[in-house]
Image 1 (cartoon, rainbow, N blue to C red):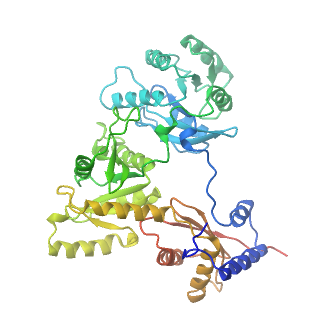
Image 2 (image 1 turned 90 degrees about the horizontal axis):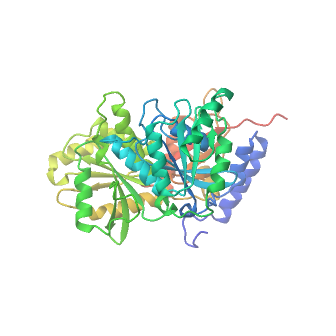
Length: 490
């Protein structure tokens, strides 16, 4: 509901414009999805069950048994990282899932290895933590290989946990593999469910079995809650000062370390008080840690950044102000935009910047970062703590923009004025017309524009620029998709 003095609140005139445009759409061919968007009017809050109460299902098993493929199959979309190399999924990653009308949180884990050391030890720890923080476990075994010593060790871990377990015999692609699956009764975990995660065979039966053992409400769901302190990812190329910044923030203004089980084993997130609020900082200082093999090294570095972004709502990208802006800086910033996260640029080592360098830095920003003039800038020193207090208003502004909704009537009245003053160029004797627009989502703001013809990229950028000027989307990427629709044939 809009406040009486809210500048984004639609007026009566704007409502009339919206009604007229809506009526005009009747002349065009619209799909069911189009109609749902148009009829939906203002973007409503999603009626989701509180994530903290959703039951949690952890998917565990040794490396390369097909856990991530099974996760993708359950989610119905290619979300988890799948690569044909054992051990790609190194951290716990939580996804929202649904089956037969019941929502739950699905947690993908790295492979569990006995006597693991180094990176494999961390993966094993993550799998153990995932079991502790689950209401039920999907234990995946490769039916074509049979039960290994590692599988037996996982069984002991699962028995100690006391959690209900659904045993998945994966890679059973046809009837012949059923005998391999039956052999897994020997693990003593009850019925092995034969599945082909790759082809979807048997996955529905497994999910029915999971729902049978899931509680109505989670005993551990708060570990994966979407609410609570806002989540901030610290990103940047190596040696730019991420760890120094986190240490400065945590060392001077640390609050009680999060007591959620598992964070002591995986000390990546820091709960830090800034101003009068507690924030959860997702540290990515380990982004440089490369796997010892050259193959896939960049993949892992990028994966760490991607995982941090998945967990975060807003990213602080640190840039070394004392050195020239590097291609790697631009790449990290682009990753934040592609992930659809709110953004703050923090120029670190500002205490080392003299007037001449300030001049050249401004020129570099104008040249290299011209497309993201919307991101708030903070000049700081992680070493001395200078201007760190300016991070909070920048973070709050970006998050506010990230969640902003524009009423449909207001949006269409505004676009009508913009298009009347600056019509789309005529191309091939035709001039595409904007028919209607609506905001389809937030976090980040996503707009859908219906048009009578192709809208050029330059004109889309012009609309984005005007949207930012009018509604102040400081600190958030915004997405504009155009649906070209033809007139109905009489």
